[in-house]
Image (cartoon, rainbow, N blue to C red; front, side):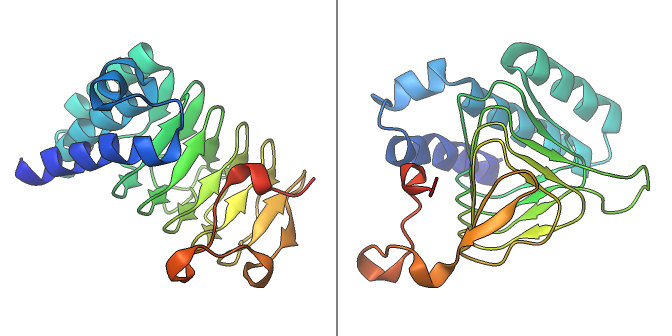
Length: 194
């Protein structure tokens, strides 16, 4: 239980650094549906992993009803996960989302087959996915990659790449990205190319 509370606290805490409109932790906790969806998922995911599948699916349904965010309780979600605005986000059962990932509204992490195995994407640490983007199939989006708004991605994306369009195409690699202090890649989404 302590780990779950620490995760939720970290999820709330990361919002201030990724959303300039955030005015404090109480406001974030009370008014951010993406945060509510992640909290519900943390609870439903614990139930899923314990084998309480019916309870987990019910909690997930309640969360979807309240937040308009659909995260399957079987999805694996990392630390400091932020869904900004939240409306219309769908994350499938076998999706794996790393630490420090940000999704905007309308994002789908979906499958392309009915096979029972791995069928949803894996997002490595530090990925940013723009509004309306669809990432489909059992592909991997590399660390610190950025997916532009409304892109449709169905192929692997290397670490640090920027992908835009339908179908998604790499327009910028890690070597051309602006660096922050300490060598970290700048993930400012307003710097996405046209």
